[in-house]
Length: 184
Image (cartoon, rainbow, N blue to C red):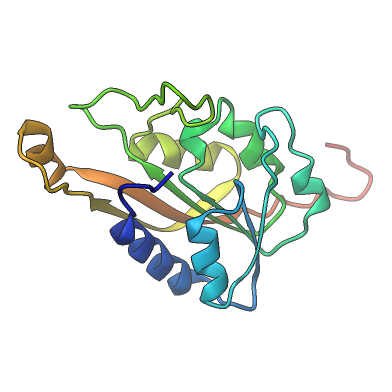
């Protein structure tokens, strides 16, 4: 996946943001198979377990079987058809999500060789915020950053000042308990 380029800036920002809001004593379920960033988290002392490649759109069993303090979804939600269902199924109290933001000057990403490496959603920040709100999460912190490239042209110029990545730390809003004898 990173044969020619390694996203050092994105990984640096993501790790700093993660460390700002959680500690190495928290257990983490990282959505997606083991990847270079999950290895970095482990090297930094975090206890990380990855999902095993199951299609999370149709199989959310991992949220029933894995009890962790934190769920991370770094560069995952844009590949999912139904992130709403996944966000509703997460039982952990803390959630970190990063996404590549929709770029007005570039079409949605689509690999021609890898069916899994395609973006079904390309979010704007307000869309992800709204999705989190609708699924019972409260955003505690958020950041955006650019991703300039060392190329010449109009799109590379736009990348110098257009935010490309958005990261969010959210906490599950507790569901109020019903009075005794009442049903939901």
